[in-house]
Image: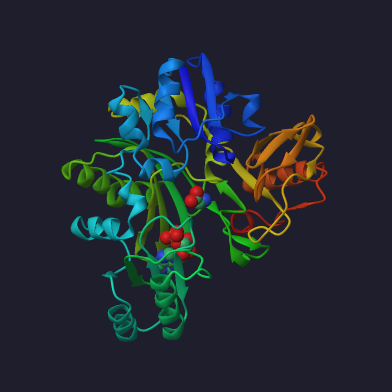
Length: 429
Ligand code: AMP
Ligand code: GLY
């Protein structure tokens, strides 16, 4: 089969690595890709926001399957456009992608189908929202509707903080992280517990669990400092016992798949549930309609089965009797980022030692933001490398990942030194 992956991050490198290893893959392309992906696939300089150009490329190169990485093209309907041209594409339709694109849509769907999630209200006006916050009290969570690249959520410790967040989101002034006014916000109760990510493959009618993971969102050691796209992750999440996984499938994933089918927007692709595991069980914080980044990097290391037949079964509605095998090992990834990230940083700084790092037992390196310049690997983004490792437990995976990092010479980069700390503390109990 000829396969095209859309995207350019560590998630897409991990997918390319796994898909390239499939005996079903004849030729693998990635648009636009990066320097690491170029080792697995032919990178093509396509603008993935230009759906007509993507369709034309698929027709010219006899693409049998398109795998869409990021949420933006999904929410813009790339799968619908490929579908219309008769090209098989892995990912949800625009209509089903509202699960990530609209928080209000998802919250209403949960309420109508008894899917456990924080109590909430939707608001279009600041005054109503503030009155609600004053009635409810703090802590309370304020969320902008629409895709906000992880910047649309404020967990407010006080009523004043919540009111400021409401003003910030509705004003959308140039200093606000949103950059544009929210047309609607959701205000919800603050959940208490431990967060985990859960991934399931869906074919419109049924779903099979992939695996669980936990990520570290804050930039600094000890989970301090500003939020980022994710500084590291590991899988499985120790809090996700087999019984808890089953509850998530029964109480959250399957009711969502059924509800979307009933609503005429069947969900095909990966459903990524952000969960809070509370004393009362799992609660849905949010849905993403795509693989997580950097969670996919650890999931792909643990997946024993061929990924390609699973992706095709999801596209073709054939997941019912599908079974995936996983290595029992733990996998962990540490993100190396450019100094300054998530604030401003420079691009184009030289990275050395990657080959020596990759020699360490169990280690796999996925590139997130790199390019090749005069035969050197240089940084080309904020999150630049994912240093991943398998181990018999999280601690061993962590030791291997940091041993690899110590071989990398990149004075302009940094990473956290404590990825996996919570899981390791649990392993040592
Ligand atoms: P989201 O962008 O929806 O994933 O939210 C970002 C982060 O905000 C989550 O990973 C949680 O840490 C936190 N968060 C969101 N909603 C809630 C909630 N209802 N209660 C507590 N924390 C929340
Ligand atoms: N790691 C979180 C995400 O992919 O959204």
